[in-house]
Length: 104
Length: 156
Image (cartoon, rainbow over all chains, first blue to last red; front, side):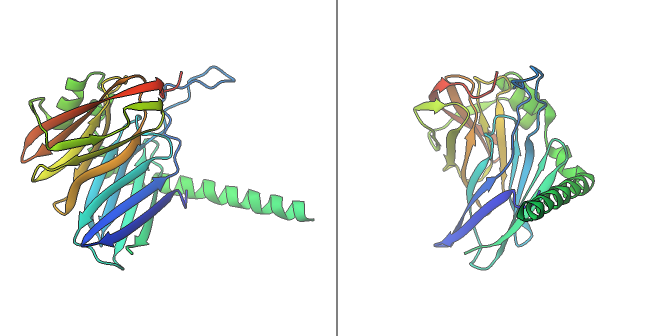
């Protein structure tokens, strides 16, 4: 599950803007398979955690209403260029992925 | 010869991915899962979702919350929503979609360094309000914006 997260963090005027895109099906559990007519089981990201230099800056808890291949953006202060930002997610099947990036 | 090589690379890459998935599944942090409120996300009405997330439903309408979303969304599967709060001490931002089967879409917990702003994309099954609920200093504040949906985005 590597490379499921694309993240960009840029600091301007002391405020870091983070933009992240995650590759994930985000199945609601309400959709039917066109061939078999069976419901496709729910498979969605439940929690996204963002940490700056090891300190939590944002925790997102998601339900099935978040779109496929989720997009997330937020802003925080107190970071400088070169700092490490880590983004990780866990889905309802216990699958997980994380990525670290340098703030630019 | 090229095709064989390509096939080999593809197979080995897939096996690698599968192994990685199984490995991470076992090591998934359990404490993180516990924080996710099933009661709130499975709730079928707004009040139950709020009770599950925040323990109460006493909210104040606020003009300091701005919801940015399209007036008309052609595709309900991808509706961009941004919420910004000018309320001092904003601790968390929830996005609720009363038109969906389960209204609670997301709850973002902010640190003291994080600005009262989040942006994401949500699925909407039909024309309905987008409701933002913000907790600041232990109180709940709310605002809403209607989005007209042309094609619903919840499957079926």
